[in-house]
Amino acid sequence: MYINPKQSIHSHLGFGLGLRSEYYEHIIEKQPAVDWFEIISENYMVDGGRPLMYLDKIRRDYPLVMHGVSLSIGGTDSLDLNYLKQLKTLKDRIEPQWVSDHLCWTGVNGINLHDLMPLAYTKSNVTHIVERIKKVQDFLDCQILLENVSSYVGYQQSEMQEWEFIHAITQQADCFLLLDVNNVYVNAFNHGFDPHHYLNGLSIDRVKQIHLAGYTDADNYLIDTHDQPVSPPVWELYEQAIKRFGSTPTMIERDDNYPDFSELMIELNHAKSIDYQLYPEAWRAVA
Image 1 (cartoon, one colour):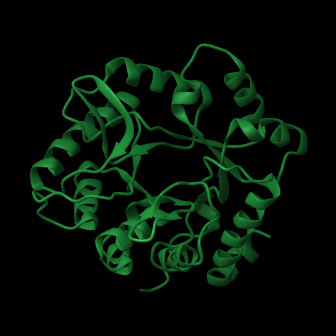
Image 2 (cartoon, rainbow, N blue to C red; image 1 turned 120 degrees about the vertical axis):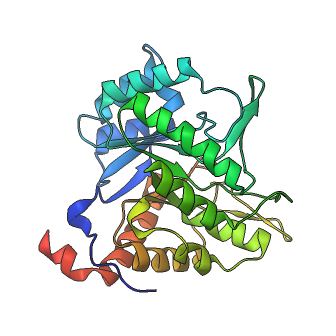
Image 3 (cartoon, one colour; image 1 turned 30 degrees about the vertical axis):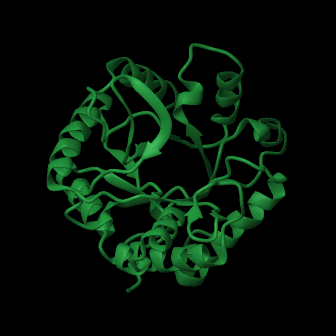
């Protein structure tokens, strides 16, 4: 690996957190030193109500990015036009820095499984997904980011490695990757591959955001639960990731077992410290 000098903190948002209702009041009252917040798109795809009220207050002071869980870009059902209309309405309203979702499928025959299901890594799926991404990007009038998901099963039909699948899709669809470093580590453990090979197989110019989160150790496999602090091996892999991809907008995800906000800030500051150690000149340039 080598350090990519092309990206620096000049060219990205910095370090953010997932916006969760448990922290609305704290954020508004204390205005913590967070560079940006990531919202779950579906929580705000409504005409009014408490979530949008808080969001309007918070977005006055912080940049936002949108992160969805229902696009089902890898599904076989037709793209949900009503969903896309609601997504675009929210995008036009809050003017996020970018819009992301997951590289997965979430249902079939109109039934939403409410989970992020992994895909078979086949050439036909690459073609299918690239076509759908282009339609979504045309509809939203922007490039999107797709996140690599955790998985606990594989498909006999797969013809390539996960990172080769992602590389092909991002290049052919001209979209970006939201790199979840925790998911890379979880999948490497569960499926027995070297996570560094995964990072090396991705395009440097396609990684636009990074997620960090915690997992649960179930002995024979790891589960991406987002209810624990980021683990030491994931921190180590994060360092290798930003050596390869450059200083990249990074956020801490927590979706259960919510800690005091100060604990999230400790993790966020740790991510900053790793970045600073690799790119001190970039940090001094904007100090």
